[in-house]
Structure formats: structure tokens, C-alpha cells
Image 1 (cartoon, rainbow, N blue to C red):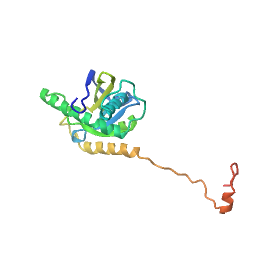
Image 2: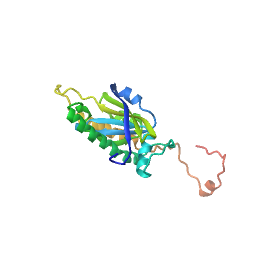
Image 3: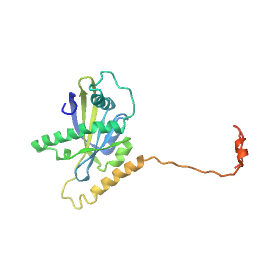
Length: 212
């Protein structure tokens, strides 16, 4: 409501602890996957279903959320950039509430990081083995809804011998690896090289056989 004059409601909220594998396996194929940058190098994740993402984009571009279902498509980094203020605002408000109650320090300090293309790439960027997983239904103006998910790492017990050494660096390396693996690469395989006069090349016809 503060950002875009859009009525948003959350319901059916659940909180469980799950392993990385179980949480990632439950992420739907469609929708927006986001890496969350946390305190001291911690890395979390968020998933928003495509109908909700499309509705948030509609609210900012045409001023309202359409009652009809959006046409299916892949989310883009432009979509992610338009949703980022909502994610950051959510965590800013959440932190104030948690600080007042003195609870859930593991849910504080997170912000929008970067969009991830696939759940596999996301799993490579997440360092923790266990996560607090929040699932909840998001309703946009009573005309569009979907289930969102937040994954926030389970914090290791402080004071353990050698705990945390190299942890932040390892997290950053994992995040960098995930981004590098998304970069396009071109592979060319040359079986043979041969020289022909231009007249011969010009005379080539479909179906001719060249001896290698």
C-alpha cells in the first residue's frame, strides 16, 4: 500500500525447518527466484509465483491488477528489479517487528540480492545446509493470489571452535560460481579443414559429398 497504493494480504503462513535439498525441490518451475543478501555473508532465497509477479508489475505500469490470468512467460530481470522494492520493504518492516518482540534474529538483515535463473543455480549459491522456510499465500487486491516462499539459513551455534572461519568467503564464492555458471559459452568443434577454389565452392549443390 505504501509503495504502489496496492492492497496486499498474506494468509496461511507456515514456518518449518527443511534441508536445502528438500526446500529447493519444492520450488515450482515458474515464478521469480531471488537470492537474498544477509548479514555477515549469509545467503537466503525467495520465490514469488508468476501470477503475483505479473500483478506487481501491472500495478506499477498500468495502475491496477487485472482480474484475468496473465499470459504465461518467463520472468525477466526487469520483473525482478520492479519487485525488489517490495522485498526490501518487507524485510525492513519485519526487522522492526522482530526487534520489538526480541525474536527470530535469523530473519533480520536480509535484502534483495540478484535474480536466479533456475532452482539448480540457486542451490549452488546457497551455502547453508538447513533453512527456516516460510510459506504464505499472497493476495493482490482480491483478484490475484499465489503462494510465496522465503528461505533463511539456520544460524550455527555461536562459540563453536573454529565456527565461521572462512564462512563468508565460501558463501561469496558459491554465489559467484552460480553466476559464472549462468554465463553463455560457445563451443566449436572442428573436424577437418580443407581448401577449395572459389569456383568450386560456388558450384556446390545440396546433396554433394565432400571427402574429409
